[in-house]
Length: 122
Image (cartoon, rainbow, N blue to C red; front, side, top):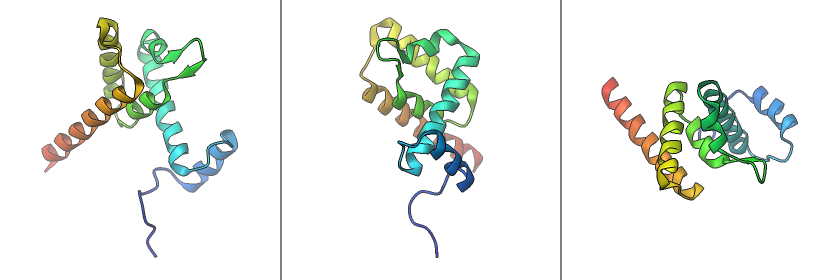
């Protein structure tokens, strides 16, 4: 019998290990989002730690989780860093937006990016 919904991103063993690290995260989607965020943080940190500081709130000691998750959905680390740099530069020029708006902008870009990529492969 086929499972419904989105296909699993990672093997079941990964989810069981992640569940031990993040017991308060209840869904596979939540664990996948953590994975995306970690991928984005590591790519950005390697490229430019100053940009990473923008995604971290020093008052609350929390990352802009949703934005980093969207950035981490790109498979290519170079693209992740480019997107993070663009968000950072726009915010520095006075274009700082609420997190939800950044997420929507990045998501639309990613979907257009994937669509163009698929078309070029056909």
